[in-house]
Length: 210
Image 1 (cartoon, rainbow, N blue to C red):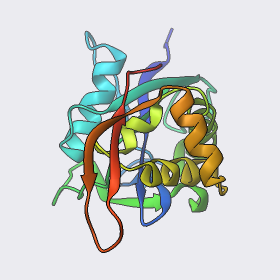
Image 2: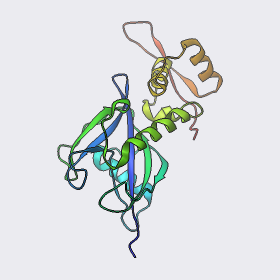
Image 3: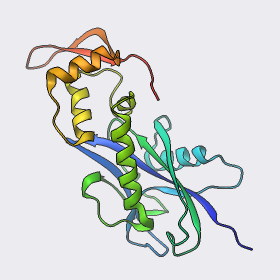
Image 4: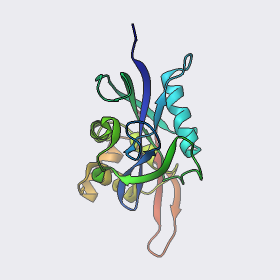
């Protein structure tokens, strides 16, 4: 009796040019050759699920240390025409888009795309995109998950821009700053960023909240 194989798929988010973007890969072979999807792969015997997800991302981006969280398990038997594949989905965050490697034997191309303007993806990955975005929008309301999209030090204006980009709506500046500071989400680092306008105070996240 054949049993399903197990894979991981990862929605890697970043913010670029005012848009929330996700890394897409163009599949070289198989039933979805030429189509776009999220990076991922089969879990080898003896490797933990999260280790597989991190390895796949490091191979595509060169980044080993990033925010990674398990999302959901997709087990519909017809998701992959080549066989019954159970996919454990993750989402990950990086502060800035990273360049694609010059050559990848598994994928024809890698591109960052606006997550709200994705094409029809292979392997049913549009549902994965919707699920990942909904989780990110929910988590940003009660945790410090935004730290995965920001450098270690940032201005409150930059933090607000991250929130607005994820939520897809404008936020009142005064109320946003009041709420963030009352929650103790961030702390001043006693440094300022100087530029063409008045100096902006820099902040860092106070502690990690999951």
